[in-house]
Length: 87
Image (cartoon, rainbow, N blue to C red; front, side, top):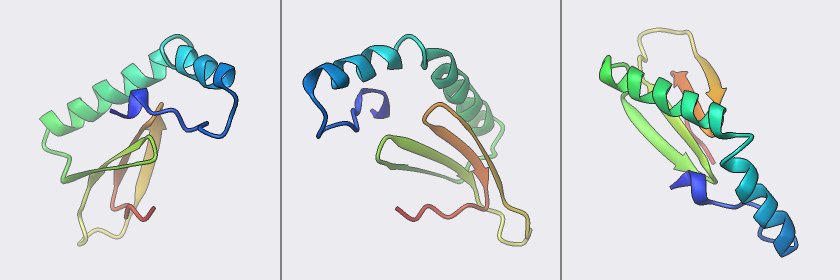
């Protein structure tokens, strides 16, 4: 799960502990909003694929016949349309 991934591997242990603690306090409202938004879009049939890379979850709707592309973030979730995941 992305919520448990700590990206500061090269940092001292106390910075990794702080990042982990902040994820469940300061970042919790954003993570919850992103999770609820992603589940809502999926329930409405607006999700074609989900990609994960480096702690970020891309929830995407593919509509190649439409030329518009957009995206917005809540915490580690990126809700998007016509965005290509290319780590």
